[in-house]
Length: 239
Image (cartoon, rainbow, N blue to C red; front, side):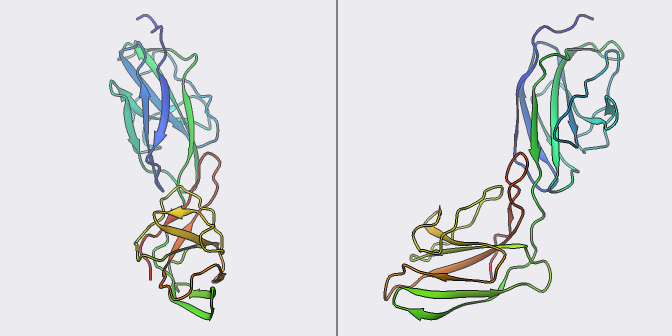
């Protein structure tokens, strides 16, 4: 069986979760594609001609590819997408894709110029929100916000949003937001400003308007800046 001429391309990752991600690619000139994933920041393992790899989208249960530390076959077929599961949270993985012709031991893989993409799975999501959110020590244009940590299932960090129109805005996973305690200067999420992002239990918010009602929401989260992408995972229910 002759080797294909044109390699698959455009390998990309989307929908990253705590234990998986979706991989998409443009097919090459071969009749099939093999996609492999390695628990590492690089992946130089390539398939061996004449080997018919058994794949599984559950990471680590498909056939091993290359040399130790191995890659694992997560897809083998004629499609251009696969959703991979069974991965560890807050971990780095690198995927490769190869076009090939031939089956049943006649496999001939194109192993040059193969596309590769790295990604970091999200951190675990907190399971319980903060408690006792309180605004105190109010002045004309400022007050102090405080809150208590959940006794179990708390996040390492807290994201505080404020708005003056009662909107229920929520943060998006795998996004890092810029906070500023000067109301109106932090990053916007919908119509809410981020006034705090950190591991503490309070913030003094300034630049408030007099005789104005504010809606305050405190979100628990874990994660931060990952190797390939942000790993933040927000609990989008609040106290």
